[in-house]
Amino acid sequence: MSIFWLASYPKSGNTWLRAVLTNYLHEAGEPASINALIGWCAASVRFTFDEFLGLPSSDMTPEEIMRHRPLLHEALAEAMPPPAFVKVHEACVHTPSGAALFPKAATAGVIYLVRNPLDVVVSYAHQMHQTIDDTVTFMNHSTATLGGARPSLSTFLPIPLLTWSGHVSSWLDQGELPVHVTRYEDLLANPRAAFGAIVRFAGLDWDGARLARAIDHAAFPRLRAQEEEIGFEEKQPPSPSFFRAGVAGSWRTALRPRQVRALVDAHGPVMERFGYLRDAEAFLAGEGAAGA
Image (cartoon, rainbow, N blue to C red; front, top):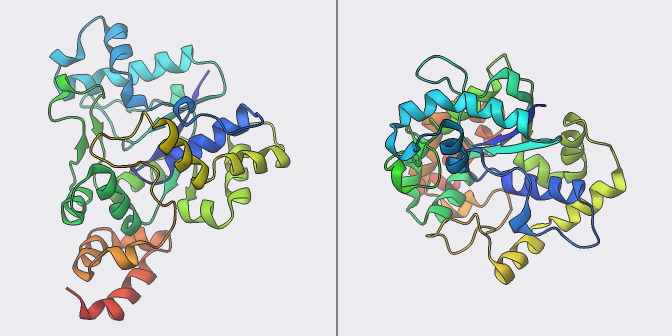
């Protein structure tokens, strides 16, 4: 048994994907609960990690934890019934001992979601309840890590992110694991085609009517309504809400030219690879040129 890793940089549509897959796999007359989504986060298994090792990870350094995580991933792949989906925000890196963090033996495939970093920074700043400038700096930092500063106080294992473009390249430019990449913007523009391709890549039974219902049940207004009614257990404490807008292009009114420039300077080649650079450069050359 092997895992399909649902991989993405934070705030790139991973939870929406999980909501659609949950509704597709567990078809019902009403939307699935947002607090019962498949594909829980791999880094959230600290207690499973501790039980697996027989040692408290709170007494280990981040480097020591990283050395053991490939073994944990292999154990999870053996234990999870198919279809097995696991959310990961980690970059596809190697451990200090040289082993792949996501072993080939534990992997059925990778579904990678990529989103315009100009929109990511707006959404991520909202979630983390911090400034755009601080979030830009974080996304441009080559050793950016989540949950690693004081691991003994976190329920999550450390998550190595790298820069935004480093994260994308780490998954798409490796040659060991099969990857299906989808742009967040394509999920919005043509959800039936984009989610349908994901369903087929994962080897799930194809049913067009079933997919249409799953997409409808996971529509952003429904997700927001659920969060308002029952709360969302995965929401970060500082953030007022998790399901914010679910749109593309909000960066145009939220970012200043210098912030756009900082992201373009750091990630231009990968932005161009996915069709994001032209709009950013047009913004900087046009109406954004007068701003500061």
